[in-house]
Image (tube, rainbow, N blue to C red; front, side):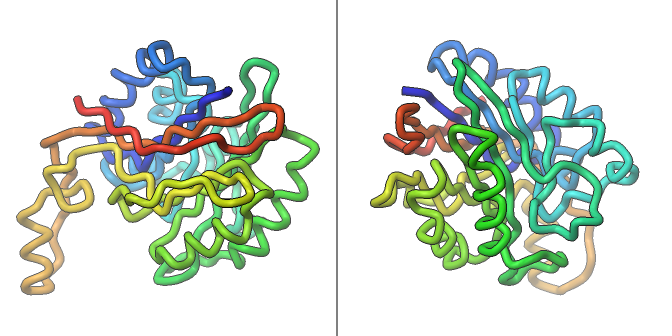
Length: 260
């Protein structure tokens, strides 16, 4: 059996630090073959930079995915194409720079990963995630032994629907974006691992990774404020997926929480 770890949204410096401190050791101790991480909030809570991406990759992450904050850091649009183990959402317009998938390998087995953005309650211009996923799956069949799909979306219904839509055609469909890990990890009937949201890697003494007080005040009076990244109760939240290499089907999935 192969093991794949998918790390939920890395938020700011606290999230980066726990990944850099713990991933290499976790790989050794748990015999993990593949590590994928969503890094779209890793630069001060919004976006990513080339320096941060390289640091995460050097720490033991094999591939980095992104989401709706993909373009938040100035100049990233000029850097993303230089990093072939970082991919932006596949259902963004084709004119956007960067890779729409990544293929990683271990023990002679190849895994392709790509992300689709949901369209319910999201503000980015994106193609239908279902049609995009269909197209990407067909395209990647000859390039990899297994396919992992990340759906970066707000609506749980949209995430669940994509899981059922792809059941039996990919190894895993894993949700990100809402930063709160869900209790619905399962293997669907045709062999696809599914989880609505893998959760956040960062400070949990927070509101979705941000300092509590200004967020509460914003809810109460509607006035704009800076939401700084919090620092307390740092955890890494991830999905650990077992893969049967003979059939490229999931054998299990569980939420893995690592505390600093």
